[in-house]
Length: 261
Image (tube, rainbow, N blue to C red; front, side, top):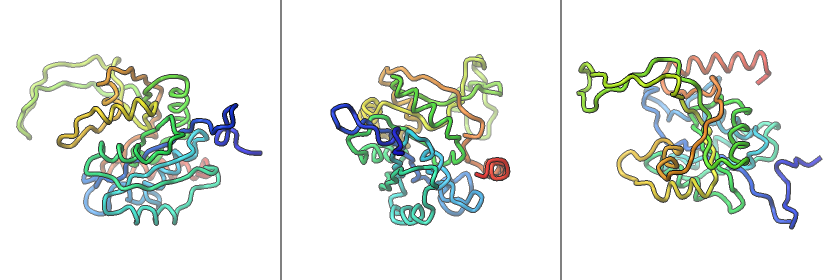
């Protein structure tokens, strides 16, 4: 039986709008130390990027994954993905590789520009969150489909957070200026989901100075467009430091034992 989620057609015979995931993977990931770019570091013997692509491709609503590769590495990333094909559970999801830019903001913009015209919902996912559960991906996409222009998965903040004064030299004691109410704070994750038109406008209007924006939802907020949160998942954490990689290895090992992952 054909997959009705992926292959549904509108009443007039035209293809229904589709959902795509854009994965910027052009960064170096210096906090993990020397070696390959962070997205290409092995996790359980498989590059993190491959895990991230498989994670979003398992979602039935995602029919296209666009990987944004380092400016000098698009061919190598394409070869890597060909060597690690999607599992059967991903159905007939397509995977495209495009060349990224000098910042994450520019790379996401290039991924957006590469999308075909029938994509109306876009998920932007960090390659460094390789273990995001498929249920989280589906929940974000469903909320956009239900009418939210921008959706972010998030978790309550466990630690007390302090706001400091700007301009303190590195290594010096930092003066505290406020203690935000923890119950009103959330730690955001990815994939972040968007109406394509809204996200495209956010990128078109955003300045491109310096390091560029690192949070697409924040760019949408600056448009005055509402952003809503859905529950995130503790296994959708970002692998940034060596200790995160140890935790990710443990999660993956547990999944292989309990889920056959």
